[in-house]
Amino acid sequence: MDEIIKGIYTGVLEGDHDLVVENVQQAIDSHVNTEKILKEGMMSAMAEVGRLFEESEYFVPELLVAARAMQGGMELLKPLLVAEDVEPIGKVVLGTVKGDLHDIGKNLVGIMLEGAGFEVIDLGTDVDAEKFVKAVKNSKPQILGMSALLTTTMANMPFVIEALKNAGLRDSVKIMVGGAPITQTFAQQIGADGYAPDANQAAKLLISLIKK
Ligand code: B1M
Image 1 (spheres, helix red, strand yellow):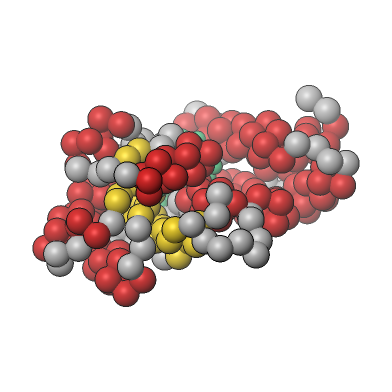
Image 2 (tube, protein in one colour):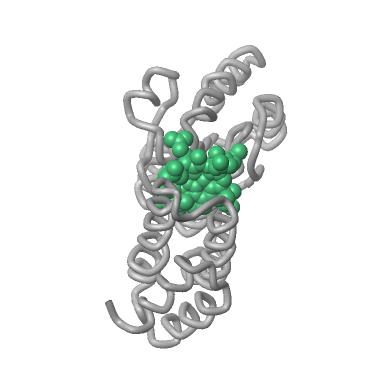
């Protein structure tokens, strides 16, 4: 691992926001590939943070500082990933489901979708069915994207789909779901139109859904 990527990795792992920001900026200035910064620097460190949490070596405070450090790096990367001054090819309403506060993956999906030319309306985290329905009604997106990181909160996804049906809006949007515990089988079981395992695939999936 080269020094800059190592600095980013260590910064996320140790929750050192300044170290991440400093090294991401250096990586950008040195024209290091954006995907390398994201995957080898930040995402692999976050996977290690998750492992340490599982092993009870890290606790919630360590997760929080690691997340803050990663968000700092992502803010610097965002302008490189987002398409500017282009006519949007579609509109997406995005949110993390009720009871779930994890937003790094969802934010990354949002950035990649913006990069692919979509207008993204981000409802944030802990979004209940009523708020999703209201956003679909008011903003009329072609796609609704739901993220969940907990096995407990993924169970809230079907309630959103049910609420859309009850509001007579289910056929007006395609539904994409994702997040670490979500699988293609789960997506099919709950009646979603698509599942993407990561942010890159999410952009590809959306383009194919919108063409349908
Ligand atoms: Co939490 N947490 N956490 N956490 N956390 C996990 C998810 C966990 C797996 C850790 C572990 O045990 N190894 C575990 C869940 C276990 C389970 O349910 N099976 C867990 C737990 C238990 C908890 C708490 C319950 C801990 C507690 O309080 N005791 C608590 C719950 C709080 C709540 O939400 N109500 C909690 C809290 C937190 C923090 C708030 C401290 C913090 C989040 C901060 C934030 O997001 N702003 C946090 C963190 C950081 C994590 C880990 C370490 C990292 C998550 C992350 O950001 N990954 C995580 C362990 C892990 O993932 N290895 C863990 C990086 C991100 C880029 O990946 O989010 O997977 P990811 O997103 C990917 C894909 O999943 C996909 O694309 C993304 C990019 O490629 N994707 C989509 C995501 N959404 C998508 C939507 C799509 C398509 C693709 O379409 C719409």
